[in-house]
Image (cartoon, rainbow, N blue to C red; front, side, top):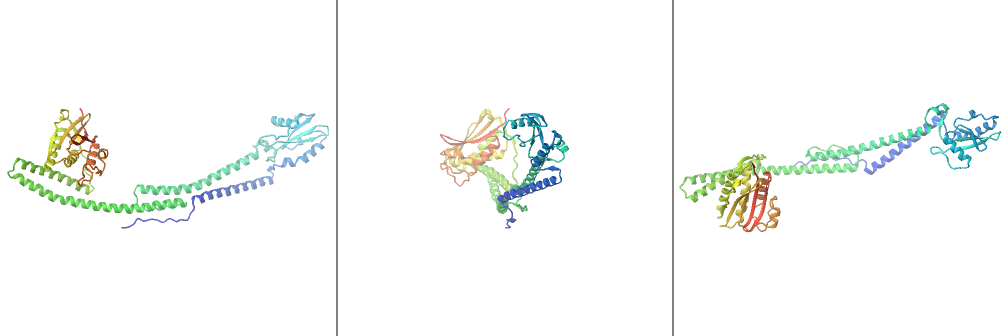
Length: 467
């Protein structure tokens, strides 16, 4: 048998741990490069005198102080724009360019509080004594500002904007790196998911052509591919065995037609002779059951050819169905020297009808009768009765055997259950009661087993039509 084709995937690639570290290192290097470019651009702007260094105000203090001392009269217009100023006389501010908040910091400074001022930029103060006894208080901070005073007034704070742009670029960089490595993982996981879906849909002859970069996912894909190939080989073997079994069943069903034809032919010849009443009944029983066997053989041939029988429901009267069940019980019990007693049909059921798969219902009752006949000693009786409960009618078969064990009452009706030690198997495979339970379920009913003082009783409950 040709084995499933398995595609070997390359083991080269990266593991999940390596992928994670590659992501961290790549993102860190790119972020560091971006920061270096940011600093380079800042130096370019400083060299172009578009902005001034954060140390400009601190470095200009000596020149500014010298200029103020040289003035005969205080002229604030000559103070560089990157300072705020206040004119102090006798501990009071008499003139200022500061804001209200800056004035509060200035008064704290005058009062001797040396704590840092400001929350965004720390405000620093420098006192310059004048020749007239007054002092000029210069307020400044370490921040980058525009070289042009007009831009300083019109545009937002340069340092905040520049840092904000850097942060936005860093976030975009992280998002791009994360997206790149996420796409790698997504592509690999989608390949594994697609392979699982192929196996689920039983597309086992299609080779897995996807390649993945992560070693762990490549190993998972190889495992799925191995499973696909082994499953394909296993199914081929099963299909071949199933085909062989169907062919053998078809041949056996065909060959069974010959002995059944012989049985029916001889039974017809016997019926033409002068027979006693008892002999005539036996001959008719042979004909009836041979015809049933022919119907079963035809169903068997259809199943072997993969033609499942169509379930066709017809309307049947309950009393006629019950009479057919009684007749089948009589034919079966006569072979073992048993008797069949039919209880009187309740009046409430005599005119009831039901939509039923008649042949399957008769087969189900025949299974119950067969079980009762096997467990009833020769010379004893089998009782067939009926009952009505609401929308359900039941056909009850009572034997004269040892009854059911507790295990049988719990498990009977399951496929291949035969482990009831109180009632011998006699070569039976446990399919009879399972078939009965399936027929009952399809007809809205159930199979009920119980013990009575006389033996075991099985009841096939079926849904009936109500007025």
